[in-house]
Structure formats: C-alpha cells, structure tokens
Length: 270
Image (tube, rainbow, N blue to C red):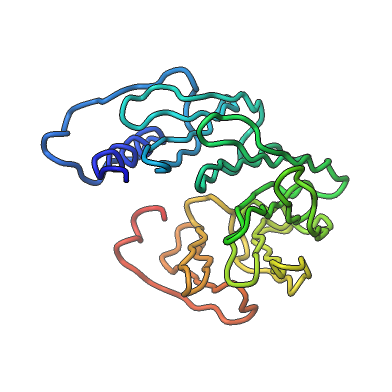
C-alpha cells in the first residue's frame, strides 16, 4: 500500500510540472522542494500513478519524450524518445498508453516499470482530413480504442491487431475519446467550425449516430471542456467568447441542450 504522503507529493509534483498552482499543502511542506528533474524537457502531460507499492510520475514533454520519475526521490526511472507530439498519456495498472503523431498515428503500450515497449499499432496517414488522435484503455479489457489516422479503431494487445475499425471519412479532427456504458464517443472539430460527435458501439464498432454541437467551439480552448461525470453521463460545456452564458450538452442526446449562468466563473476561463 502506498502511503498518503507519497501520493500527496506525486499529485503536487504533477501539478507543478504542468505549471499548475498548489491549492493546499501541509505547513511543514511549505517552501520545500523535494526534487527537480531537468533531463526530460518541459512537461505537457503528467499523470501520478501508484502501482505495486510505489508511486511514479509519468510525463510527456514538448521534446517528444516519455519519462517515468520516482515520486519520492525524483530519480529518473526510465525515458523513451518518441520524437512526436504525444497527444494521449494514460496509465492503468502496470501499463502506460500513448498516442502520438497527427496525420499518421502511433498507438503504443509501454511497461510502466521498465519502460519497455509492450506493443504498438501504426495507422497510416489518410488523404482525408487528419483525425487528430486520441486513445483510451477499454474498461475491463486489455484492448485500446483510438482515433488514429482517419479511423476509430479498437486494438487487441500483443500485436495491436484491429478488432474493428470505423472509417471517419474526414468528418473532423478528433482529439478526445470518452467511453460511457456500451458506447465510445469520438469528439472532434469540424471543418466549418464547432464540434462533431461520433458515437459507436464499444463491442462492435458500429456507428450509432453522428451529429454536430457547439458551433464555433474549439477543443482544449478556455471556452470549452468535456466533463466525464461517470454514471451520470458525459457532457460538453462551452460558451462563446466574451459571453457569460455556458451551454451544456449531454453526449448521446442530439437535440436537448441547456444554458447555465454561474457568476463565479464569469471572470475566468474554464
């Protein structure tokens, strides 16, 4: 079992690596720097993860480096040069999942302890609009679902063979995947502006529906966010620039949307 102090340090270190602000810490920890790791580049994505009694910090950096750092000492456990922009970083159990590249896309699963490559899948670049790229572990399975190249694909471990593949046909630049129940949602930016949602069956890859929401919204901007509320659903929340009204949409419902005004978030970006 990992002690609470290790997890606290890991969470705080992850926030600071991304330039985030610490919301609170214990008095005896104020003003102290436990360690500093300067051999991997500036972090773009950071995950703190406990596994088999140890806590590690896993980081993707602007140099295209994937690295694991000991949360307590700051010692570099391992480092891999991916040499591409890493769009997805997810850690589950003893595995690290990355997706990198833009037009063509590589999905890789790494051993969290040693950093060795367990398996990878390379999706060739398509002549259609680039799909952006995203990936996630399938709950209750070792499979991975990815938006790669111009396809939504479910991959089996080992050789990364496709269990199913759904062509996206250049319908958007998909940079976010969310699993909910028996469905997976690919969320992307459409060419004309706004977001496009593709909902597929998680087991078969069959397209359930495709629709547009959030005219003018851009994924990852300060005016939009995708919120996973677990059993309560997945929501897209956005607003127009300089507007005080937030629009809310629950994924899977093509028509119902509603507005929300919240004074506390009017003066700052989401």
